[in-house]
Image 1: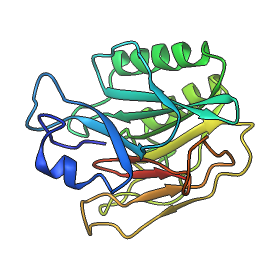
Image 2: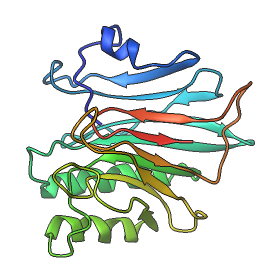
Image 3: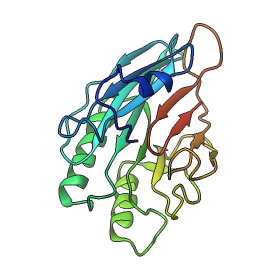
Image 4: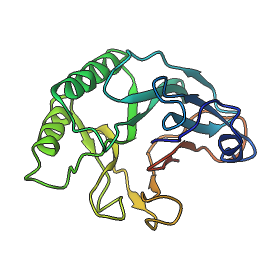
Length: 208
């Protein structure tokens, strides 16, 4: 979910936020011109930012939304495709999932992990699938999300979550990733208008 922005005031970041929406973002500290992620969400949602344990191998950002008196945590993750997933990457991801699991509330992870989960011969894809299974999670995207092929952008939810249909919109129009839209069987608390949370960036995802 790479956005390539150096501050929340960047013009392209502000133009990407529709009327009635707001956003939280994180600039990549080591390379502010070529990184960063953001989550865009309806401005009248009841929400709070989430403090996540810092990782060194991927970028992540989280927000907690009120869902009918309960909580829904939305987490955006970006792992550069130019960097091979390492042991440290899976250690950091394990730590993140452990910390979120301890919060005892529903959560969804949307992200561009740049791991070919559809390739049963890919050792990183197999290891990621095993890690998600260990935490009782499953990813719901079907089909390629990149114009060169590969299911690189994921929507991860608990295995006991009801059906979560996903659609990947045309690839290569805005970026080399498609737009992944996922319908969740939950509705955040809001003042007025449709309930939708948008995680945007390189490999965009909508949770509505």
